[in-house]
Image 1 (cartoon, rainbow, N blue to C red):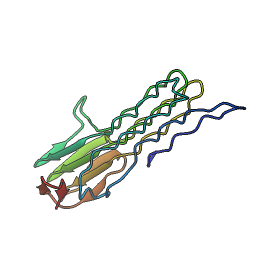
Image 2 (image 1 turned 90 degrees about the vertical axis):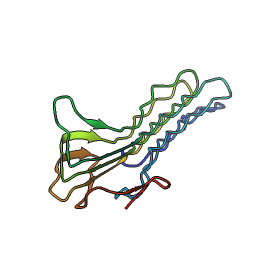
Image 3 (image 1 turned 60 degrees about the vertical axis):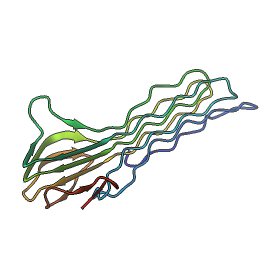
Length: 178
């Protein structure tokens, strides 16, 4: 899912009401990561006539910023993961919670080698509603940016925005890069 998905209402029959599932955390901000954002949380599932306990939405991903002369991801067992949290299924007449969205990953260096799909910022998967509870939406993807004056090597999920500059300056008051 690129953007967060909305939750669904429970399909009801005569004279019954269902509890809707929570929406997934949304995708926002700019692909160039001119401002770094945390991933957003998924929405909480609905309640059916006060009889159930809805599932909370998943947390969104965080902010990862790495600047160095050389950035290598690919040694045995190494990866950078900043995904939103997935949610388990709800129980007892309640809607499921939505998955959280991925966070921001910003890498900068004279050489940046990220391996093959070792850097991810994806949305969390949603849960399924129980009894009269609706299913929830999956979280949206996060943002990945790689700045290097040389060629960056590797692939990311989602696809990274790239630029040929090095060492971003971070304004700690606004989380903006320039």
